[in-house]
Length: 301
Image (cartoon, rainbow, N blue to C red; front, side, top):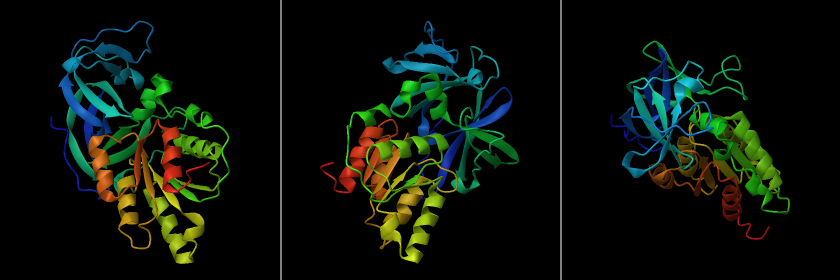
């Protein structure tokens, strides 16, 4: 199946691949997918996490295979089905699924963020829910699934400590990040790096509404000197937010940093075309601080 359906930049749309496990429908952003291949035997890894089936080497590249059925506590996968090979956070990982249904183009405005009864900060692995043809499709948080299995692949907050003591800075920064946990980690990390005036929002729409409100009130200079945005977010994604900022004559000089697990070659090109000032993969929180410093002209801190 061709998983490289190209979308125009900044349209606030995404492609979702629908697949099945234990009779239920789930989804993954097509932008995360490298390819889909039939199941093939894997080599078990001693003392590995229960959800890790093992490793295999298609095209001479070693890839870890994850039993998604086990992750969802639906039993263990059988030796059949498909591997969805993904790339995000600079990792190549295969997820074992049963069947692939197809690809749907949807708007981020159609995606509902799960409430606390479905997904909590601690244990939820659903990042969104969308209704297509009368059927609910649960979009899984693949980054969280991987970081739960291998915590060292998550946000590298230890790199902030390596920066040492830095001067405090009250330059206002606006953050758009839908993960409550990551939002808190980013805010805490930037506070440690000296940035103290931070406004955090849950998605691109909230961030855009805040910017528009500041424009109307004449307080933009007091509240927004730089924007940090994820790409994947309900209601409005980071590419749409970047496009709105950079296509507005009054806002275009505000630096925008895309901080996302989806910063691969294709997404980097899209970000550049939209005018993003910097693009970084999510584990690199230390590099994010460096990019902020450069965008704000803080060469000595």
